[in-house]
Image 1 (cartoon, rainbow, N blue to C red):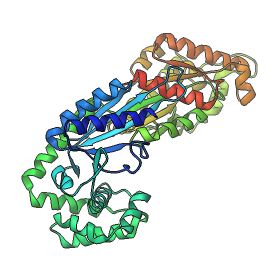
Image 2: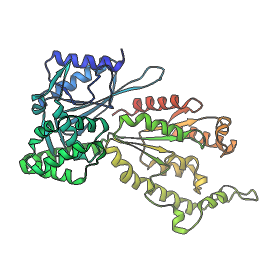
Image 3: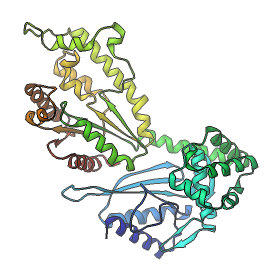
Image 4: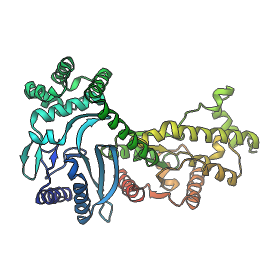
Length: 440
């Protein structure tokens, strides 16, 4: 019996024993044998929400699961993610729960728990929504959040009688809006809802109860305010010389983490809010790097102190502005951002970027940069890297390796990973270390 099956079975058994109503909104067909979706959406009455969350926490802890992340998606939904890793780090198992007390989006509440439970059907240890209610929920949320219907939801809506959806949509007092939503459902998953659905749903919610709408709106603002100071997303950085396998590891990591985060974004070196300095002066930075690294007569021609300081300050400004304009908003939304190199490369490989400054000054400037949640250095010997790519010389690879290892003394949180192992092993090591060291 799998770990997820044991957890889900015992969770619903405990809940049923205490007489708490729970409704699994989607992905319930094969539960508890498997978890077919990326998460389990559970609806509970508001008065039972605290008790259910306590049972979920106690049951998962008793089964050896560790709480990796817990935050409010909005004032109706509490998101919890648990993980379980074997000692040998073969594969980290995750399970996600979205525990909600009503169905809605933003300040709009479509169905409260009592309305859903009124027509819910019992299935073993839990309830499931009536077919028309489930289709209506999926349709309203897709329209509100302007996302295409998932394939299985679109097929379910097309196969089910539309009269059932029409009955549930009677909550909307706008006949035109009701008919448009029914038509949207009839068209299926190929249709992407336009922005006017969201606006019309907001107008409907405000019209039927202005006071409730305003209260819901301020509740939502409060939730997002807390996420600004404690964002649920993560910033991950992968370091290493060219040819060590950073791009391959990042691609595998994106695939592995996709079910765990709202979205995954990737970046290279810096946020790039500001353009390259060469665009201001019309100079070829690649040619300057060749001059700065070595000249034909063997004499190293260094960039001046002032020009190096200006260049480093410029990139520091890019990191500071870019972090708060491009990276931090994604973290607030619960997304993961994975960077190749990041600002650490300016410390280890500064001469290639025409920055000739003493290490102490570089260390002070780098200390001002926003820090990531997890940093991983992929280490491999020069022979191994050269067998994959010959972009760098053996001496340059060893220099960069030594630079990253020295960097670990300054930033002890950097995790060194043997890059000679398979991509799967590297990915699982990164995932396991990431969740263990960056739990919120």
